[in-house]
Length: 279
Image 1 (cartoon, one colour):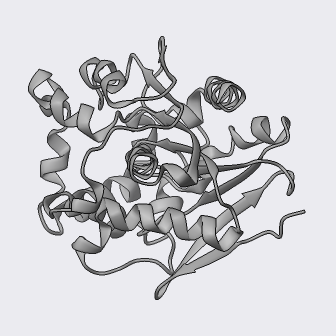
Image 2 (tube, rainbow, N blue to C red; image 1 turned 90 degrees about the vertical axis):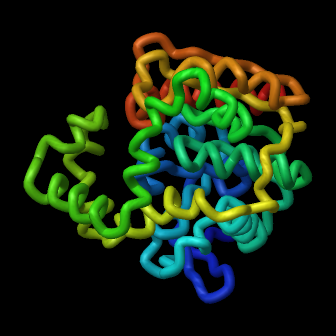
């Protein structure tokens, strides 16, 4: 029986972790996106536990109160990947089934590409491989990603999003989040103090990061994309296959939007379990 961890450390920072399910089960590491926390997986994890898997879901850098570096460059992808590997080390896990959504998917793609010795399988949700995402820019993705440029402006995005979360009770629903996640957005992100760190993930994109250069993935991989995702287009989804040199499955979810862990938990869990079972 593995010992549980509720937190782990990397350097001066302490990260919160939800470590649940059978302690002796194969481990599944779940990486959340923006603006989400580890609780975004709460509809997925029981389905994995029922099949005997242990799940570990951290509040990532910028979201955990004890891991909020002040400088933008401390949020580059290689640092975020190193955080995930530090969690595995703290839990005594050599290899893990890795799952990521949104920004968590970007971290998961990079971790699988650069550290295949630590990743048994990869399941990525919504966000395509970074190389596919970059190539999709000229195919319409740039129009969907306008907010990434807007988030580079100092202080204004915090002020605008903070005001929306404080004064608009329906803001989460307008973003497309289902309940109860929509109503919990203010408490989870704004009141929790996570908004500046969450935006720092975008602001770190301007810094060169050789340790996270787009690289083909060579572990068994599944990619899920919802055909009503307003942030990520079909071009990037289709280009993913060219960045995986291993068994690969592309799953397009009809009628699904961006928020797959919250709104399509059964489909997400089924894809994870199928990938793990088929390796």
